[in-house]
Image (tube, rainbow, N blue to C red; front, side):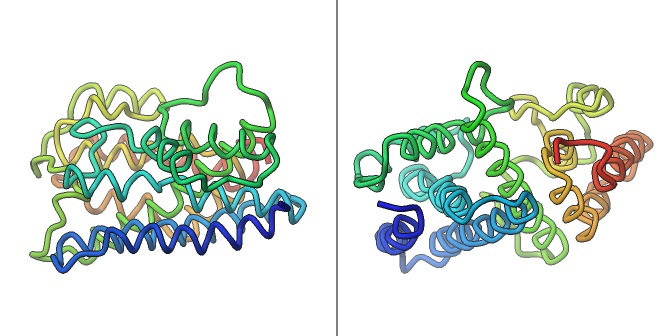
Length: 268
């Protein structure tokens, strides 16, 4: 099966799979819709970033297939546990691999491409890139991780700008909304490295973690999108209590973003 045919069939199967989780409960349906829309947008971001890298159409389709499948574990996760927190449920990436294998989503695909898709889905939420993996797999993983971040930035910034009195506790990982910033979060970000999920104690920590994702971006086009959309600025404005620590973290991240958008950082 070629990549274009695979992508068409995967889209159909993905939609059929997601419909199993539809609910009359508006909160449940809101979160199912959130992840379905996120998937669609990640596929668009994959195309955008991938097109800037002059990929072949087959490789673009393979990358988009990774985007389509990367969060397929989220639907079963939310259905079983009513949370998107891996720490409070199970690793959604590894759950996604199980769903793909059990549902035979990749049946008919050539083994090298199936290998890449399964590995990329299973790796995509790791804190860092896996050591010792083959270069082609790592390339698709980097592309997916960039596209995933681009859309999560879209989701959270839209949420922060329109929250009002309507809060989505699942999106906030049920973290307390206080002015506090954990020492570990501050130290990681001031050293220019992403924050570990295990160090999150407050909603502020989570928001600053999202700013810190800029240190894990791989491609110039991704930096440009983040700059154009002003994602880091919007998140900074959403942090409770604009302390000097927040301004320090934001200033360092902004400088890194500017360098990346100008092509001075990242492999492309």
